[in-house]
Image 1 (tube, rainbow, N blue to C red):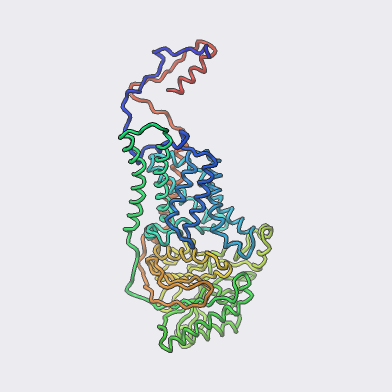
Image 2 (image 1 turned 180 degrees about the vertical axis):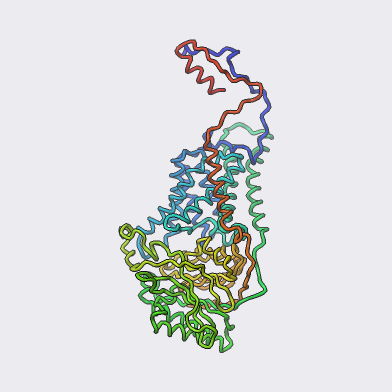
Length: 588
């Protein structure tokens, strides 16, 4: 090293030590370096533990534990774990978070079909979180400093859920951050931007929390230097301001008015007939399931005649309440007609139809009583988004490797082509069948087509005594606020509920019980901002979530201060001059 020339004073860079440091805005300044490393990187064992804990916390935020405040905490944990990491390591951390979340959250998917389908679904869904996490290190370097980081983290979560809800095979938008917030104040923003805006708000609050924790960790990592008063004030601003912004977001969401009543109402009765036994065998007991719903309706009719129950305007049965095609089986049609005639009002029946050729259809049929304006079977809606690997089997030969239960789906279910709006009992029902409630566009279409009340028909018998039913009920509560419509959520086995337009549950059934829920619900025709703007909030947030990390990944040109000169020539004095000059240039 002795042959490296020492720079002369003329060659040395201009000293800037005495120049005043530029002021740093705690919100827009670049995020601070993190503990133990200049780039904020946690050691791998610590990062893995934080990532796994974040996934578990996210699981607890959803029904049935329903500890919804932990959803932003989980977002913050994953963001901190990925801070300063290389993309491949962040990918691993995201996969750990995804598995720690989806494996317990989706355990109901394997109750009766085995571990492999459950593991495959949880693993595939976790890959989306992993890909998102690979961009989180760039989110910490996003343009705009802390504000840019918060927007990037929020947008990345929205983009991840948007992709997961669309691909493959039409996507699987279950377990979105928004669906954890049915009891939280952030639910209110669903009326402005739907589920994507709620997800974005949750992630933004989580990002603010991560920024605050990062500032505290960085201060602790500075060692034993005693902080001055100015240092303490800067730390307070660096950590306190993101917390204040997060609290302001929650307060702003609370101030958003939720939809409430209407001038017109309808008296509804939702019939939960129950099944003889839980599990996949309910299909073999389809006559018993139909009889259960017919008998519960006839008991309701008797209670009305005796004055023990109010007369409904319409009776609503769940999905699969008649798995015997009533349009082709006279016996099933007679059972339904007898129940409908006894109550004297239309009954909306969930039925499996043996059509089109070599397929089946999952349909809802308005069945009128004798003496009414439209007796017997009338208008119907066919489910537009059958569930892949449950109602139809893509790649059947491959799927059979994971479970021979796929052959229980002997005929694939054909999708419907028209929006589900049914006139019954004076209401225009926006009909949504089972998992369709998780898809933004399928719900929004019914409202834009004129629905003034939402009907969610579902069958949860195949998921046993699991949290799947309450997870789905939470989605219906969000849809109520998003669309400004009351929702009748009716299941074969529960949990069923009658939901006000503000998301509150007015009546709720038990699980695997026979029950009839009754209430007078408002019929609203006003459209919320969310139903008017459609996909725009999701597209905007997702675009920001992708753009800001992309800009952060671009190489930055070094800034030159006024009065400094950039050397344009080098004098070669010896073999070591190249190394010495490179070192000098790196210092400049």
